[in-house]
Amino acid sequence: MKHRGGSIMMWGCFAAGGTGALHKKDGIMRKENDVDTLKQHFKTSVRKLILGPKWVFQMDNDPKHTSKVVAKWLKDNKVKVLEWLS
Image (cartoon, rainbow, N blue to C red; front, side):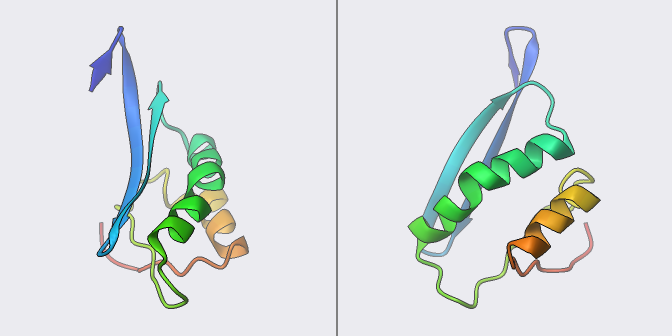
């Protein structure tokens, strides 16, 4: 999606029971931005969706999502990630 000569990136999540946060980010998304977005929106979305203790996080395996810095944040925050091929 293009906007004023730049890119707009969207981050969002959903589960069977509904949708979590939808976050708009102007510019190019980098792994450092991905961690910031997770810090700001991930836990809020999990609480909003009332997922309970046995949920598993699935992502599209884009390199910025699977970077060491993102993997560390997910591990430090005890997020169980579904392992699958991209």
